[in-house]
Amino acid sequence: MNNHPDQLAFIAAESSAARLTHHLTPDQIDDLLIGDLAATPAAHLAACTLCAERVAAARSPIASFQQVSTAWSERRSATLPIPIPSQRPSWQRHTAWATATLSMALGFAFINATHQFSVLNTPQPAPAASAQPAPIQQPSVAPKAPALTETASIAPPPRAAHSAAQVSADNQMLHNIDASLDPATDSPAALGLQSPTAPNPGPPASIQD
Amino acid sequence: MQLALDASIANVPATERTASELDDMDTLVRTHRPRLLRFVAFSVGDADLAESITQDCFLKAYNARERFRGDCSVSTWLTSIAVNLIRDQQRLQKFRFWRQARATAIDITDAANFLPSPESSPESRLLVKEKAAQVYAALQNLSPNQRTVFLMRFSEDLELSEIAAITNIPVNTVKTHLHRALKSVRAQVRAAQSATPDQARNPKPRRRARSSQHTASPESHPAGETL
View 1 (tube, rainbow over the protein chains, first blue to last red):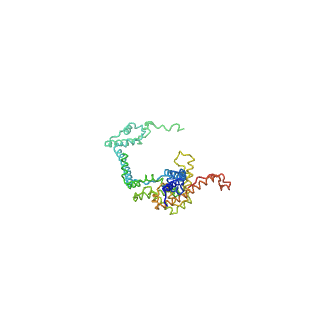
View 2: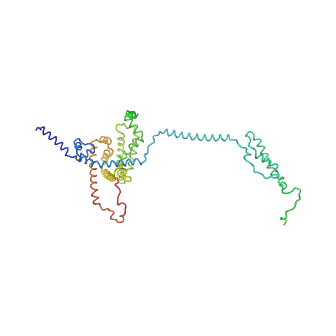
View 3: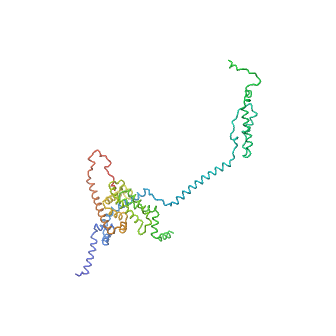
C-alpha cells in the first residue's frame, strides 16, 4: 500500500497532536526526575503546562527533603567540633620543645650570674658595725664609755685596711665589757650609792621598826 | 594579576591539584564534610553513627591519598569511600540495632528549623517540613541499594554515570533502582498526603483516653516525626 504524501503529512500532524494531547505518564515523570527523559516527552513537557505542574508537584517533596537535609547537615557541621589531625611535622614540634628548654636554661643561668656578680661587687660592711653591742649602763666608768661609742660609730673601713682596726676595736670593746663587768667596780661606792668613807649606819629606820 | 593566577592554576595538572587538595586536610574537611555527613546520616538514620562514619571516611581518604589517581573528583571518591563504610556497617548488622534503639536519630522537625529562608512564611516552612518528613519516612522503607542511589541522585545531585561508578553497578541497574525507589516514595508520599486530611476530619481516639489519670499528660501533642 503506497502512502500518499498528503496521507504522510496527515500522519505527521496527527502524531504531533498526539504528542501535545498525550500527557506524560508517571514513568515518564520518573524518567524526567531521574534525568533520563526521551526527546518526545521532553518536547511535550515544554509545551504542556499541565504536565509541567505535575512534574513540579512530583519534584516538590524531594526538593523539600533536599532543602531540610542540607540545612541539618550544615547546622550539624557548624556546631560540632571537627577534630583535625595536626599538619605540623614532628621535627618542628621537637625543635620547638628544644628551643623552649634552651631558653629556660639560659634564663636561669643569666639570673644566677647576675646575682653572683652583684654579691661580689657589693662592699661588705664590718661585722662590728653590723652587730652593734647593746649600750651598757656604767655610770662609774663614764670616761671609758667614749671608747665604746667610738667603736660603735666607726665607719666601715675599706675591705683591705679595716682588718687591723677591726681587731683593735673588737679588743677595745671586749675590754670595756670586762671593765664594766668587773666586781671591783661594781661596788655601791662605784655606783654612787654610798660614800666610801662613811661608817655603816645600819639598816634604815623603816627596817628597824 | 588575577588572570595570571588563574592561568597558573589552570596549567597545574588535575592530579596534582587533587593531590594537594587531599593533603590539606583542614580544607578537605571544611569543603566536603556537610555534604558527606548528609549522605551518610540519611543513609544510616543515626546522627552519631553518621559522624563516626564520616570521620572514618576522611581518615581513610587521608591515609590513602597516595593511591588517588585523579580519574574522578575528590567528592566522588569520598562518596565511594562512604558507601563502602556504610556497606561495612550493614554487613556488621548494626542497622538492626539503630532500627530498634535510635537514641541519636535525626529529628526532622528540629532539622527543618534551620532552613535558611528567613523571608519564607511560616506556612511554607511548615509545608516544607511536612514534605521532607514524608520523604524521609518513605526512605526508611526502601532497600539499602535503593536508598543509596536515591540519596545520591536527589540529595547529592550526582549523575547516573557517577552513581554507577561509585556503587560499581551498571547504569541500567542504577536506573532500575531509581525507578523503584521513586515509585515507592511517590506512592508513600501520596498516601501520607491523602491520609492527613482524613485524619484531620476523623481523628482516631487516643488509647490513653482509656485511663483518665493521664488526661493532663503533655504527650497529647506528640512531637514531630522522628526519623
